Image 1 (cartoon, rainbow, N blue to C red):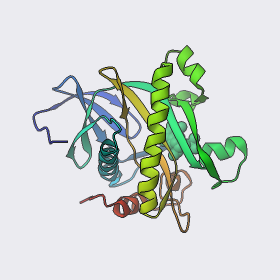
Image 2 (tube, rainbow, N blue to C red; image 1 turned 180 degrees about the horizontal axis):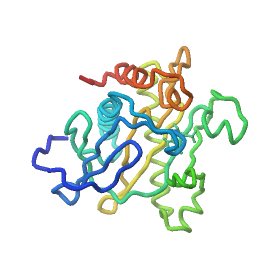
Image 3 (cartoon, protein in one colour; image 1 turned 120 degrees about the vertical axis):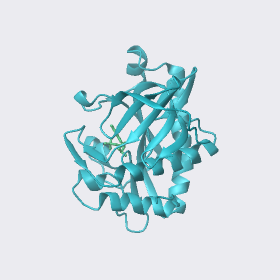
Length: 243
Ligand code: TMP
């Protein structure tokens, strides 16, 4: 992960809810710009939270480096600035992989189970990335029949997601936190499945192990306040250098 000062940002490729993706002078590389925008309910509510872009960019870079060290291929190449990272250009698969270690969020709503119930073994779910349809849950058969991913790709995505869960559950546990659940997105680079998008408190649930205080985007979704302060606490506990 060496700084690649020669790659220049060119035109905007895509503006998502929290990140903007830019083309670069290298056709195989993109720049992700982490913005302060924070969205919930599929973009229905959006607010700017000061420092969030910087915190999530540095947090994501730290996590992706740890995953690379654990043998998981990621798109991350180099940290470029406070809120920008250089990444490989993947052909993204429009299927989100979610692992849950404890019941929360949509699982609690869907199945009427108690929030916080431990899930053994962890559950694995697929969702279609489609805000207009509110990211509906899908299964492997849908993904294959509609051509969103092949069986082999889905098998690799599941194995990598469960491995990410092992690595990160241990890391958060050591820092006094429970990794409740998280979402990953994958893409294809030169024929191989590679972890893309981001891993940050915007796309996972983290609770303090002792008090079960929420330290993730549920603070925003549920209007609990102290959103970026919680993200910074998570980063600080893991040893991410922010300033
Ligand atoms: P859920 O409980 O709303 O299904 O979400 C499970 C986890 O996945 C939670 O940590 C939030 C994350 N997630 C996203 O970040 N974006 C998404 O579009 C979805 C469906 C889940």
